[in-house]
Amino acid sequence: MSLSPQFGSIVPSPIQTPSPSAYLAFNGGANDFAQQYLPEIYEQEVERYGNRTLSGFLRMVGAEMPMTSDQVIWSEQNRLHISYDACTVVATGANNAATVTPTVAGVSVVVSVNDTVVLLDPVSGAEAKGIVISSTPGPIAGGGLFVVQPFANATFAAQGIGATGVKVFVYGSDYTKGTTIGAGVGNSAARVSVDPSFTQFSNSPVIIRDQYVVTGSDMAQIGWVEVATEDGASGYLWYLKAESETRLRFEDYLEMAMVEGELNVNAAAAANYVQANLPGTQGLFAAIRARGNVEVGFTAAAGLDNFDAILKNLDTQGAIEENMLFLQRQTSLDFDDMLASISGGFAGGTAFGLFENSEEMALNLGFSGFRRGSYDFYKTDWKYLNDASTRGAIVGVNSIEGVLVPAGTSTVYDQILGTNIRRPFLHVRYRASQGDDRRMKSWLTGGAGGAMTSTLDAMQVNFLSERCLVTQAANNFVLFQGI
Image (cartoon, rainbow, N blue to C red; front, side, top):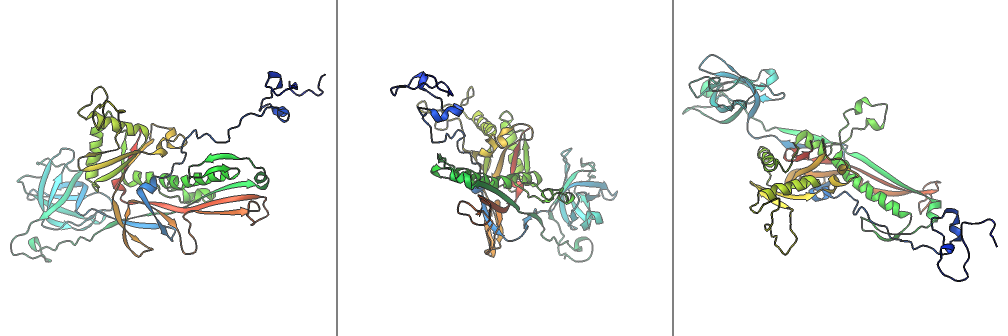
C-alpha cells in the first residue's frame, strides 16, 4: 500500500526498533511532525568563549564618587622649583653676561636678582652657572626676561652654551653680609614673590543607554535553556536569557566608555545632527595621550633598555613606587622574556630551575611581579586588550598593548563629605542626588511581563547611566602602543 501524499521515506514498523526506513531526521523540515524517534537535545549552553565580560579594570584600580553637576573640575599641582625650557641666550657684551628669555607660551618670569642658576645645553651637553644681575618679571609676551653673569671668566657661548633651546633652572641665591631685600638695586633689589600655581582640568559625563524588548507573544512561547551566566545567574531561563545578556553588555559599556571616551572637538560645528553635537568625554586612553606618557613599540628584543628609559622618565614625574601593568598577551610575554633573559639560569630560551621551578613541577615561565630600581611592578593580563570583539582583534600599528597605572592615591575634595579625602588616581564620577541616582538605573515599560505603563504589547527593559572618568596625575601613567 502506498501513502498519498507520501511524506519523505517513512515506512511504519510493526515493532519499536530503529531502522533506516523508520527514522526521520530532526531537521527534516516539513516532516518533523511525523518523526518516530526524537533526538537527544542538550539543554545546556556551551560556553565556547568562556567568560565574555570585559569589565573589572576600573573596579581594581579606581573608585566611584557621586556628583551633582554637568562638569567635574579638579586641580593638579605644578612643579615646585623654578625652571624654563627652550630659552634663548644672547650675550650683552658687558662682564660676559647674557640675556635669558624663556620662549614657551604661557610662561612667566619669576626669577629674582641674586638668584643662582644653571644653564644646560641639551645639544652639546655643556653646563654653565651664573648669578642673576637684573630681572624683568612677567609673562614672556610682556617682555619677561633676566640677565645672568657667568661665574666662569668666559661667556656662556665660550662655555658651550648655544643660543637657543637652553634649559635654565634656579638652584639657590647668594647675598653679601648685612644686606636687606628692599626696593633698591644690587643686593637690596626686591625679590619676586612666587605664588603657588596649579593647573585645572575638567571632564563631562556622558549618558549611556541601552534597551531590551520582548513582545508579549514571544513571552507566551516558552523555550527553556539551562544557562550559567557571567553575572552569577544559573538555572533554566527562557526569554529573560537575552535580557540578562543585555545587562551584561551594558555593564561592559559602562567601563568601555570610560576607557575609550573621546572629547568631540567638532561638536560646535555639527548643529544639524543631534548625535554629533554631543561634547563627548575624555577616557583613560585619551587622557594618557594628552597628558601622560606613550611608549611606542615595546618588545622583548629591546627589552631592558626600553624599560629603563620608561623608569628614567617616571623619575622626572611623580616617581610613584608601586605600579600595575595591565597588558595585552604579546606584551605580557615580552615582559616575561625580558625578565627571563636577565636571570642567571637563562639558557636556550628557558630559565629552568629558577623562581621556584624544579624538575618535578611544571616549568613556570611567567612573572606576576618584579622590582627594578626603586619601583615595584605587578603584572596582569587585561582581557579587554585580548578579546577578539574589542581591542584584541587588531594588533600592530597604533594598537593599544598595555597601560601602566600608578597604585598611589591623591588628595581630592569630596563634595558629599565636605572634606579632603584620599582617592586613587582613577575614579568614576556619576550623577546622583537625593532625588535620583544615575549610577546604574534599570526600569520596565510597556504592557507585558508585569509592565503596565503603555499600550505597547511588549516589555521594554531600560538601562541608563551618566558618568565620566577622572584621570588625575596622568603624567604618571604610561600607554604601551604598537608600531
